[in-house]
Image (cartoon, rainbow, N blue to C red; front, top):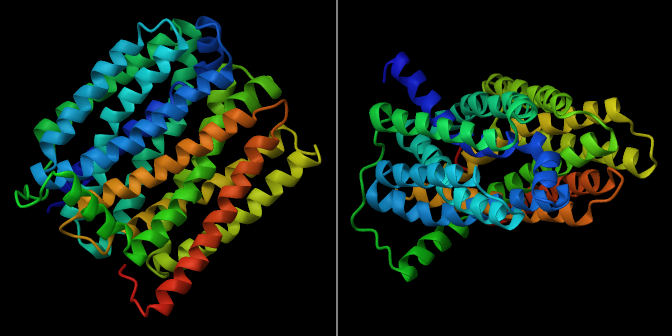
Length: 402
């Protein structure tokens, strides 16, 4: 594969992966206006975020077997068209319940890009390069939390929150064209795979019970859930408790996201000297430290806006190391069933993320404590699962594939 083709493929896979985060981050600054327009509260609007996570979680379990059975292209394009139609429908919703349901359908379509992108990384690149490729994908994915809230805040302020979903419709159209004309097909369809419930469940179970997959998928899922807790809680914390405007919130979100971008690219340099397993361990220890500082600051009411921004910046920077390495270690043992493994990994990540965002919404009060407490909890659970999982791997005398 020549250098130009390699860059183009990584860019397309990055854009497919970024569709999900962009769908989340773009409308966050519009929460207060959506609440006013639909006669509800920002906490209830946040349930549309939870429904999106639930849709992505369920959808990935559907696409995994389809991507292995029919190849990557057809299921991917079908999913992207579902996302397109749902985005157009959301422009016309008049109730919060309609928004919550439509976001679920939108997620069912959009998650095809996330699953296919991870499976294609496994298809098109050597196992030894997977962690580096995921780090490069993070560079594209991380553009969404930098640009999306800023664009969303500007669009909401000038054209109303409905314009956000017009932007998403245009974005998915671009993805459809790139996939159809320039993205390689990846692994060939495997017609021996059955789509009956029992074989599908058995395929997922074979992946799930792999000790390496289970350890690093659950570790990565809870580490990522700290990010989801921030996404769910930050509109209320910054715009309602600290009183920033939609545009200011967009800039704060972008500044914090820079930490994730920088970390993901620094990760490629660290991989030249250290293993993914070592990087994950050190990363999660740091995440627990920053999570503890956030929680103590909120509990003792000594954390103001700027210190909140700094600590969240440091906390989320760890995700730039955790995501590419836990993803690579989760998928490394699988070749023939990369689509199924990718789907199950994504479903677990977003399923746990959905529970976390719902929990933040339910516990929301007039303090930053719910958001910071759940961020700390996610970090602590992630580190605990890593140590327990590695102990089991050593006990079974299994060599970690990386």
